[in-house]
Image 1 (spheres, rainbow, N blue to C red):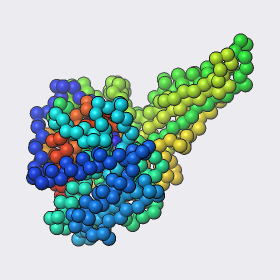
Image 2: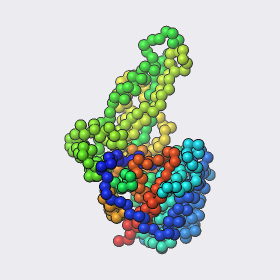
Image 3: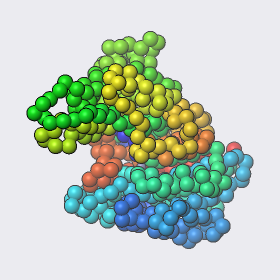
Image 4: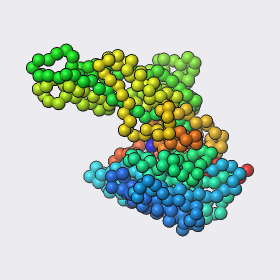
Length: 474
Ligand SMILES: [Zn+2]
């Protein structure tokens, strides 16, 4: 799930209001039923079961007329099966794949004000784990497939839906598994992934329609210092904790260089148009050659803009010593980095070694972190995907109809999604989503996760219209 793209002041609001979803009562009812069913099947890694959700969705597709031979269910173990379904097109073009993860982040009843695994509709919101990330989108993709099938719609290319396991955690990532074991099932010209992108609103007003076209690379590094130790009544200058602390202070004061790519440049250029005053001026100033350093410094005060312009590394865990009355024999810190496209983990590790400048502090790459790109031998963050007209033109057209005045803005996700696997496999992946979420109501992974009811139905309407535009035989 992406992290928000905008921070806006109240005076920057546009006057555009979103259209009500143009869907009939039957579609509304069915979309609510699918969302409810998915929300109420627990798909967490700890006690949930993705297979149950995959099978329930397969049954719905069968009931809607999909042939048994066009539905596949499989995975590395009983709890983590994925579902792939195909709607046949004319074959004029190579298929498009829609991906959605069925698993959700853990949610504990005692942390929530309601049962996270029960869909509750209150005050204009659907509450439940996955309503933002990303069962609402899974349900929307399902509904789009069902409606196309029932209409007898013939797209210009096959439309493949893959609902998968373990995006949020766990060791059975479904997209990775499908690529390695059944690539033929999801071979495509491009991927649409509603786990990224979306309509960013402020107090209900649409501001931008973002489309993820790039992602940062995730990496964890361990800093470690070891010492002989000894009795704490006889301290010596060579102390593991002091070495590590000094290293972390040097890291704190270091900033990776400013850098833009095609996507982040377009992001600032287009976002400047919906901003005002200093922020708008600064956004344009950083896109010039050479960029304005004072503008970079001002924008960098916002964590999202900072992360968009820089590789970031930050200390996230610390551990040291073994007794109150002993000199520390070992001190370690975890440093979490989010690497800009085009740079490798090894390059960043070497930078950390240079910045720390202390041979007593070792810096090693931690491989058991999440989101290690298995298919990427260079461990290099991938360049942004090309902004394909087949994806962009329909998006701009439908967005202008549904959220007039809110420009389509390519964005770089500062987090990571299953697009890391499909992009690494050479299938360009676009984060396209028609759900509107307020910038101060981002609750993905958090407590009392919720999605606006009308936002949901507009999202249902959007994907149907958008995908039809993308696949219209011309
Ligand atoms: Zn997600």
